Image 1 (cartoon, rainbow, N blue to C red):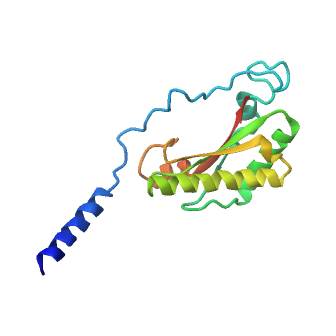
Image 2: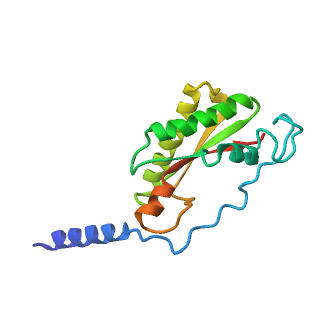
Image 3: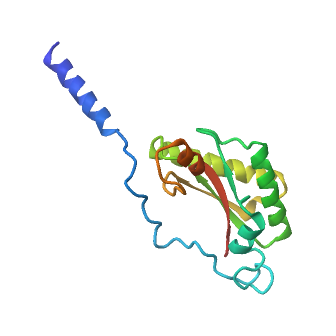
Length: 174
């Protein structure tokens, strides 16, 4: 082997070694400017008080867990169980016509950051499109992908990964 072949082999090995991905020791904190509790606004139904119709707390209570759907590895298709949850979400959104929602897409930690962001986007878009197919006006729904950045379960095992492969619908106020 000549020197160039050896140098190329070593450079390739170093480049591939740099791609190794270890799980984080802890998950990063949410950004400080992220609002996780909705702010009451007029026009959200009722008197606009916290927890009124159209608010995140009202939606969460009405959904009883149906605000989240889960996906298989590397998938973004809506199965029959997801369809039931999305029908409940659509019924809520159609009943509360001033409510707006963001559909968040999430992925587990496996794969590159770019791949997981794209997969989260496909998951959120798939859920949004299903809601639109049920009659929810598209202009009341937005999509955001967090990829692997906001896990609900830590750990490098099948149970944690399954909980992180999801789409979550959240109410937003304007």
